[in-house]
Length: 268
Ligand code: ADP
Ligand code: MG
Image (cartoon, rainbow, N blue to C red; front, top):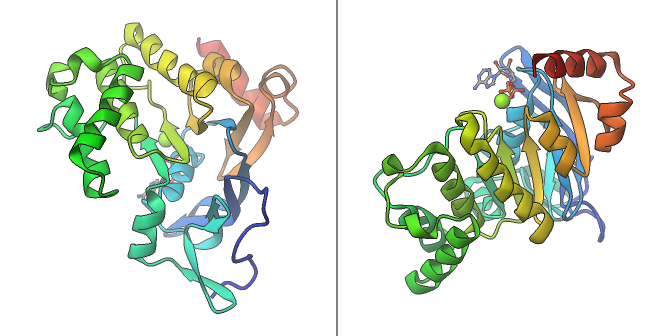
Protein backbone atom coordinates (compact mmCIF):
# COMPACT_ATOMS: atom_id res chain seq x y z
CA UNK A 1 0.00 0.00 0.00
CA UNK A 2 1.33 3.41 -1.01
CA UNK A 3 0.13 6.31 1.10
CA UNK A 4 2.88 8.73 0.10
CA UNK A 5 1.46 9.57 -3.34
CA UNK A 6 -1.93 11.21 -3.93
CA UNK A 7 -5.01 9.28 -5.12
CA UNK A 8 -5.54 11.85 -7.87
CA UNK A 9 -3.49 14.79 -9.08
CA UNK A 10 -4.83 18.33 -8.64
CA UNK A 11 -6.79 19.82 -11.54
CA UNK A 12 -4.53 21.40 -14.17
CA UNK A 13 -1.70 18.95 -13.54
CA UNK A 14 0.47 17.19 -16.13
CA UNK A 15 -0.88 14.58 -18.56
CA UNK A 16 1.85 12.13 -17.53
CA UNK A 17 3.67 12.08 -14.22
CA UNK A 18 6.41 9.70 -13.11
CA UNK A 19 6.61 10.12 -9.33
CA UNK A 20 9.75 8.57 -7.76
CA UNK A 21 9.61 5.65 -10.18
CA UNK A 22 12.14 2.86 -9.71
CA UNK A 23 12.45 -0.11 -12.03
CA UNK A 24 14.86 -2.94 -11.36
CA UNK A 25 15.78 -6.08 -13.23
CA UNK A 26 17.32 -8.28 -10.54
CA UNK A 27 20.21 -6.30 -9.08
CA UNK A 28 20.23 -3.80 -11.93
CA UNK A 29 18.43 -0.51 -11.22
CA UNK A 30 17.28 0.72 -14.61
CA UNK A 31 15.11 3.64 -13.50
CA UNK A 32 16.30 5.27 -10.32
CA UNK A 33 13.57 7.27 -8.52
CA UNK A 34 12.65 8.98 -11.74
CA UNK A 35 10.53 12.12 -11.69
CA UNK A 36 9.19 13.32 -15.02
CA UNK A 37 6.13 15.38 -15.94
CA UNK A 38 4.79 15.74 -19.46
CA UNK A 39 2.24 18.47 -20.06
CA UNK A 40 -0.85 18.37 -22.29
CA UNK A 41 0.21 18.77 -25.94
CA UNK A 42 3.86 18.75 -25.01
CA UNK A 43 6.44 17.08 -27.24
CA UNK A 44 9.25 15.64 -25.14
CA UNK A 45 12.29 13.92 -26.59
CA UNK A 46 14.44 11.51 -24.65
CA UNK A 47 18.06 11.13 -25.66
CA UNK A 48 20.95 9.35 -24.00
CA UNK A 49 23.45 6.54 -24.29
CA UNK A 50 22.46 2.95 -24.97
CA UNK A 51 21.32 1.23 -21.78
CA UNK A 52 20.42 4.45 -19.95
CA UNK A 53 16.79 3.37 -19.53
CA UNK A 54 15.08 5.20 -22.41
CA UNK A 55 13.07 2.25 -23.71
CA UNK A 56 12.25 1.21 -20.16
CA UNK A 57 10.62 4.59 -19.50
CA UNK A 58 8.26 4.00 -22.41
CA UNK A 59 7.63 0.33 -21.58
CA UNK A 60 6.64 1.03 -17.99
CA UNK A 61 4.39 3.88 -19.13
CA UNK A 62 2.80 1.55 -21.67
CA UNK A 63 2.32 -0.81 -18.67
CA UNK A 64 4.19 -3.58 -20.48
CA UNK A 65 6.42 -3.84 -17.39
CA UNK A 66 5.58 -3.39 -13.72
CA UNK A 67 7.56 -0.88 -11.65
CA UNK A 68 9.16 -1.62 -8.28
CA UNK A 69 8.56 1.68 -6.55
CA UNK A 70 6.81 5.00 -7.08
CA UNK A 71 3.65 5.73 -9.08
CA UNK A 72 2.92 6.70 -12.67
CA UNK A 73 -0.12 8.92 -13.32
CA UNK A 74 -2.01 9.45 -16.56
CA UNK A 75 -4.38 12.39 -16.94
CA UNK A 76 -4.65 12.87 -13.20
CA UNK A 77 -5.35 9.26 -12.25
CA UNK A 78 -2.85 6.67 -11.10
CA UNK A 79 -1.92 4.27 -13.91
CA UNK A 80 0.35 1.71 -12.29
CA UNK A 81 -1.77 1.76 -9.14
CA UNK A 82 -5.41 2.02 -8.20
CA UNK A 83 -7.07 3.64 -5.25
CA UNK A 84 -8.01 1.50 -2.28
CA UNK A 85 -9.17 3.10 0.95
CA UNK A 86 -6.91 6.07 1.52
CA UNK A 87 -3.92 4.66 -0.34
CA UNK A 88 -2.83 3.18 -3.64
CA UNK A 89 -2.36 -0.50 -4.40
CA UNK A 90 -0.71 -2.06 -7.45
CA UNK A 91 -3.20 -2.01 -10.33
CA UNK A 92 -4.82 -5.28 -11.33
CA UNK A 93 -5.02 -6.50 -14.93
CA UNK A 94 -8.57 -5.25 -15.44
CA UNK A 95 -7.65 -1.72 -14.34
CA UNK A 96 -4.52 -1.76 -16.53
CA UNK A 97 -6.43 -2.98 -19.57
CA UNK A 98 -8.82 -0.08 -19.31
CA UNK A 99 -6.19 2.60 -18.62
CA UNK A 100 -3.74 1.29 -21.22
CA UNK A 101 -6.10 2.29 -24.03
CA UNK A 102 -5.09 5.90 -23.31
CA UNK A 103 -1.54 5.24 -24.47
CA UNK A 104 -0.31 4.51 -27.98
CA UNK A 105 3.14 3.13 -28.69
CA UNK A 106 5.16 2.74 -31.86
CA UNK A 107 8.22 0.52 -31.77
CA UNK A 108 11.47 0.36 -33.69
CA UNK A 109 10.36 -2.91 -35.30
CA UNK A 110 6.85 -1.91 -36.51
CA UNK A 111 5.23 -5.04 -34.98
CA UNK A 112 2.28 -5.04 -37.40
CA UNK A 113 0.11 -8.16 -37.49
CA UNK A 114 1.58 -9.97 -40.55
CA UNK A 115 -1.59 -11.84 -41.52
CA UNK A 116 -3.71 -8.67 -41.67
CA UNK A 117 -3.89 -5.90 -44.25
CA UNK A 118 -2.96 -2.33 -43.34
CA UNK A 119 -6.65 -1.54 -42.81
CA UNK A 120 -7.29 -4.65 -40.71
CA UNK A 121 -4.28 -3.76 -38.55
CA UNK A 122 -5.91 -0.40 -37.81
CA UNK A 123 -9.40 -1.69 -36.93
CA UNK A 124 -8.55 -4.74 -34.86
CA UNK A 125 -7.98 -3.08 -31.47
CA UNK A 126 -10.72 -0.43 -31.79
CA UNK A 127 -13.23 -3.24 -32.42
CA UNK A 128 -11.84 -5.78 -29.93
CA UNK A 129 -10.74 -3.46 -27.14
CA UNK A 130 -12.90 -0.33 -27.48
CA UNK A 131 -15.95 -2.22 -28.74
CA UNK A 132 -16.33 0.09 -31.74
CA UNK A 133 -18.59 -1.19 -34.53
CA UNK A 134 -16.87 -2.22 -37.75
CA UNK A 135 -18.15 0.61 -39.96
CA UNK A 136 -17.11 3.28 -37.52
CA UNK A 137 -13.70 1.65 -37.00
CA UNK A 138 -13.15 1.45 -40.77
CA UNK A 139 -14.13 5.07 -41.37
CA UNK A 140 -11.72 6.19 -38.73
CA UNK A 141 -8.94 3.87 -39.92
CA UNK A 142 -9.32 5.17 -43.47
CA UNK A 143 -9.01 8.76 -42.26
CA UNK A 144 -5.87 7.86 -40.36
CA UNK A 145 -4.34 5.90 -43.25
CA UNK A 146 -4.94 8.99 -45.36
CA UNK A 147 -3.29 11.14 -42.74
CA UNK A 148 -0.11 9.03 -42.88
CA UNK A 149 -0.24 8.81 -46.68
CA UNK A 150 -1.10 5.09 -46.78
CA UNK A 151 -4.68 5.10 -48.07
CA UNK A 152 -3.69 3.62 -51.45
CA UNK A 153 -2.01 0.69 -49.71
CA UNK A 154 -4.81 -0.05 -47.26
CA UNK A 155 -5.46 -3.56 -48.62
CA UNK A 156 -1.81 -4.66 -48.67
CA UNK A 157 -0.25 -6.98 -46.13
CA UNK A 158 2.85 -5.74 -44.26
CA UNK A 159 5.18 -8.02 -46.23
CA UNK A 160 4.29 -6.06 -49.38
CA UNK A 161 5.17 -2.71 -47.78
CA UNK A 162 8.51 -0.97 -47.32
CA UNK A 163 9.80 -0.32 -43.81
CA UNK A 164 8.78 3.32 -44.00
CA UNK A 165 5.29 2.35 -45.16
CA UNK A 166 4.95 -0.25 -42.41
CA UNK A 167 6.00 2.29 -39.84
CA UNK A 168 3.40 4.77 -41.10
CA UNK A 169 0.71 2.07 -40.79
CA UNK A 170 1.97 1.37 -37.26
CA UNK A 171 1.51 5.05 -36.42
CA UNK A 172 -2.03 5.01 -37.85
CA UNK A 173 -2.78 1.85 -35.87
CA UNK A 174 -1.68 3.48 -32.62
CA UNK A 175 -3.71 6.64 -33.39
CA UNK A 176 -6.82 4.55 -34.07
CA UNK A 177 -7.16 4.05 -30.32
CA UNK A 178 -7.37 7.83 -29.80
CA UNK A 179 -4.55 7.77 -27.27
CA UNK A 180 -3.99 10.64 -24.88
CA UNK A 181 -0.25 10.25 -25.34
CA UNK A 182 1.86 8.67 -28.08
CA UNK A 183 5.15 6.95 -27.29
CA UNK A 184 7.70 6.60 -30.07
CA UNK A 185 10.77 4.43 -29.50
CA UNK A 186 13.47 5.01 -32.11
CA UNK A 187 10.86 4.64 -34.82
CA UNK A 188 13.31 5.41 -37.62
CA UNK A 189 16.24 3.30 -36.42
CA UNK A 190 15.35 0.22 -38.46
CA UNK A 191 14.60 2.17 -41.63
CA UNK A 192 16.64 2.67 -44.76
CA UNK A 193 17.94 6.24 -44.92
CA UNK A 194 15.82 7.18 -47.93
CA UNK A 195 12.51 6.45 -46.16
CA UNK A 196 13.30 8.08 -42.81
CA UNK A 197 12.04 11.44 -44.05
CA UNK A 198 8.53 10.20 -44.82
CA UNK A 199 8.12 8.92 -41.26
CA UNK A 200 9.54 12.09 -39.73
CA UNK A 201 7.08 14.11 -41.83
CA UNK A 202 4.18 12.19 -40.34
CA UNK A 203 5.45 12.78 -36.81
CA UNK A 204 5.98 16.44 -37.60
CA UNK A 205 2.37 16.81 -38.75
CA UNK A 206 0.99 15.00 -35.69
CA UNK A 207 2.88 17.46 -33.57
CA UNK A 208 2.13 20.68 -35.43
CA UNK A 209 -1.39 20.08 -36.78
CA UNK A 210 -2.87 17.60 -34.35
CA UNK A 211 -1.35 18.80 -31.09
CA UNK A 212 -0.73 15.32 -29.83
CA UNK A 213 1.18 14.78 -26.61
CA UNK A 214 4.23 12.74 -27.50
CA UNK A 215 7.25 11.22 -25.82
CA UNK A 216 9.86 10.29 -28.37
CA UNK A 217 13.10 8.38 -27.84
CA UNK A 218 15.40 9.23 -30.69
CA UNK A 219 18.97 9.25 -31.95
CA UNK A 220 18.13 11.90 -34.51
CA UNK A 221 19.39 14.99 -32.76
CA UNK A 222 18.45 17.32 -35.60
CA UNK A 223 14.85 16.14 -35.54
CA UNK A 224 14.65 16.24 -31.74
CA UNK A 225 15.94 19.77 -31.84
CA UNK A 226 13.47 20.85 -34.49
CA UNK A 227 10.24 19.55 -33.01
CA UNK A 228 10.66 19.14 -29.25
CA UNK A 229 9.34 21.47 -26.62
CA UNK A 230 11.75 19.86 -24.20
CA UNK A 231 14.64 17.44 -24.44
CA UNK A 232 15.60 15.11 -21.58
CA UNK A 233 19.07 13.63 -21.44
CA UNK A 234 19.02 10.26 -19.68
CA UNK A 235 21.99 8.82 -17.89
CA UNK A 236 21.91 5.72 -15.70
CA UNK A 237 18.16 5.71 -15.19
CA UNK A 238 17.83 9.36 -14.27
CA UNK A 239 17.35 12.61 -16.10
CA UNK A 240 20.84 14.06 -15.93
CA UNK A 241 19.78 17.26 -17.66
CA UNK A 242 16.71 18.67 -19.41
CA UNK A 243 15.73 21.87 -21.12
CA UNK A 244 14.55 23.46 -24.32
CA UNK A 245 16.36 22.18 -27.42
CA UNK A 246 18.39 25.39 -27.55
CA UNK A 247 19.48 25.08 -23.94
CA UNK A 248 20.35 21.42 -24.17
CA UNK A 249 22.09 21.39 -27.54
CA UNK A 250 23.76 24.82 -27.47
CA UNK A 251 24.55 25.24 -23.83
CA UNK A 252 24.64 21.88 -22.03
CA UNK A 253 25.66 22.17 -18.37
CA UNK A 254 26.24 18.57 -17.38
CA UNK A 255 29.55 16.90 -18.31
CA UNK A 256 27.76 13.69 -19.32
CA UNK A 257 25.51 15.63 -21.67
CA UNK A 258 28.49 17.39 -23.22
CA UNK A 259 30.33 14.11 -23.68
CA UNK A 260 27.30 12.41 -25.22
CA UNK A 261 26.53 15.26 -27.61
CA UNK A 262 30.16 15.46 -28.70
CA UNK A 263 30.16 11.72 -29.45
CA UNK A 264 26.90 11.65 -31.41
CA UNK A 265 27.52 14.84 -33.29
CA UNK A 266 31.03 13.68 -34.24
CA UNK A 267 29.59 10.43 -35.56
CA UNK A 268 27.34 12.31 -38.00
P1 ADP B 1 18.00 2.13 -23.71
O1 ADP B 1 16.67 2.08 -24.39
O2 ADP B 1 18.31 3.47 -23.12
O3 ADP B 1 19.11 1.64 -24.56
P2 ADP B 1 16.82 0.12 -21.98
O4 ADP B 1 15.75 0.86 -21.26
O5 ADP B 1 16.41 -0.78 -23.07
O6 ADP B 1 17.95 1.15 -22.45
O7 ADP B 1 17.62 -0.78 -20.95
C1 ADP B 1 18.20 -0.26 -19.77
C2 ADP B 1 18.94 -1.37 -19.05
O8 ADP B 1 18.03 -2.37 -18.63
C3 ADP B 1 19.97 -2.07 -19.91
O9 ADP B 1 21.11 -2.33 -19.12
C4 ADP B 1 19.29 -3.34 -20.32
O10 ADP B 1 20.21 -4.36 -20.55
C5 ADP B 1 18.42 -3.64 -19.11
N1 ADP B 1 17.21 -4.38 -19.45
C6 ADP B 1 16.22 -3.97 -20.28
N2 ADP B 1 15.24 -4.88 -20.36
C7 ADP B 1 15.61 -5.91 -19.56
C8 ADP B 1 15.01 -7.17 -19.20
N3 ADP B 1 13.82 -7.54 -19.69
N4 ADP B 1 15.69 -7.97 -18.35
C9 ADP B 1 16.88 -7.59 -17.85
N5 ADP B 1 17.50 -6.42 -18.13
C10 ADP B 1 16.87 -5.59 -18.98
MG1 MG C 1 16.10 1.55 -26.34
